[in-house]
Length: 134
Image 1 (cartoon, rainbow, N blue to C red):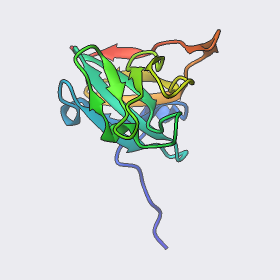
Image 2 (cartoon, helix red, strand yellow):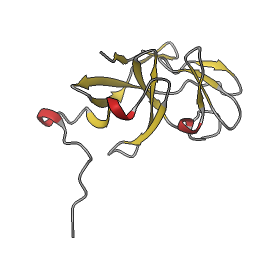
Image 3 (cartoon, rainbow, N blue to C red):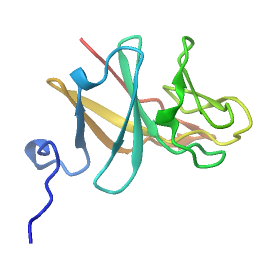
């Protein structure tokens, strides 16, 4: 029986942060879905040379956010019912959703994008976490 291995190896044994993609896979103005080893579906977003990672599951009715559109103003719009979320903070910018999308911590090592645990939620808002592409 073979053991399934991740696409990337975790650097220096850091189990909190997991390599999920390379910068080359995420061009400017695009959205990319990845599934973490934990089973969390995440949505990587590159807007104005900043990368962010959000839950890929809309908080309104559990539709995949990576199937939506990244708009000029930096909001991610759900393709199903049109909810818009800020791609940096997960904050709802247009209903019908009322709960923000969870945001995940990020690191960039070389051209490898690593996603860590969920960001802290303070007063109903997630702390933003982005990395700037050099």
